Image (tube, helix red, strand yellow):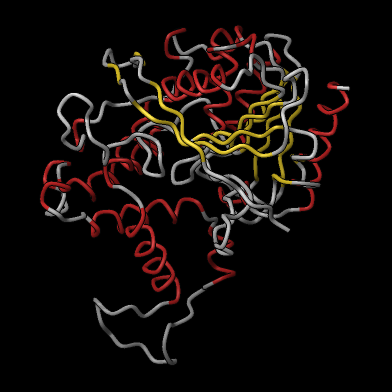
Length: 375
């Protein structure tokens, strides 16, 4: 059963330097906390979100039964990340569209909406912003930092940017950088958005329109990559949407998979911001901690001091298990303590969000081991 979650915001007047050389000031971060911080302030767990998620990690909002947090099956009282034991923090990243300062908010100097003028942000920038929030909450060291996909990249980056502040890092369905194929998918999705006539160079707010057509296509592309071929065939196969006869039309929705993608993309275009999509996919493209070490991941991860759990899924072709194994090898080369699980699951990349007894059992066991350390 889900508990009641309460969103919070924190204001940061001072400028946050960004990797691009720009900075942002007078910004807000939306966040939620679950559980109680112990007397030693040692039981905090930071959860980092992926592309289209937010700070609303677990629980429901009062009076909104359909508002369950995106990782509610993993986090909460008695769940694998047990909020009766841990103080869990979810933070919405800068540039997102779920409460933290982003492209749809006014620039503090001009009062005009940022739009396309919102500065480019990176995984490292997000981690720095999260660290500032933790400072204000009085949390010096994390029991664990946890994330899946892009969230896993943030968890990994935490161990490199603030190695002394992280005891455990749980990196799920992630990678040390994107492959060329992944960057290509992101670029096609971005082109769909920026070539939408309603995009107006990213300043569509001024025109009172939303580039929904581009957002819909971007979501369709992304959604296809999150699912495995086996799962799509099992769910939809070649089933027709209506009746048993082909319409011989190039424009009608005929197959069930087409109907599903249209539904998901329509829903997405109603709540997600187009500039946010561009910013977050670019942050994914840029993440590459080995780049400043001549491409040598072992040297890049030498700074990490945390103990690691890495989890991958057999049918995840976007963040394939071999990418997690690259991280495992680099950590072992540095003689770091690493646990690794490769779970045979049919769900593709989305498996990290779904219920699987082996996966949830693994997470429960690992976080129970962290609890024992805190006693």
